[in-house]
View 1: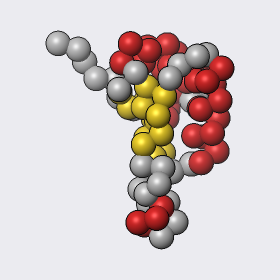
View 2: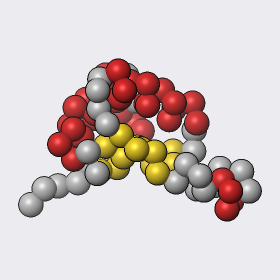
View 3: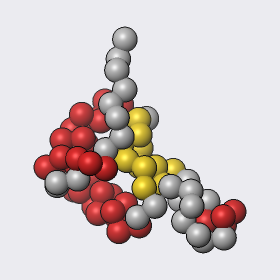
View 4: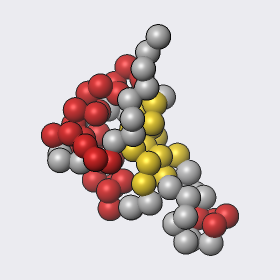
Length: 78
């Protein structure tokens, strides 16, 4: 899996989950339960992960939604 977005914004995560689910892209929100350790201060960003074979489509959806500035840098394939 590859990291698509890293954020503390629960609304953004919810929106992303919605558009990814609608497009049939499997994803996982990592670090979602870290609030137990951090005391709900939202200091640890949540990471939205997408299967490597669908990362291109997911990145396109994020761009189309006007959220390109939220994307993590692309990792180069060697």
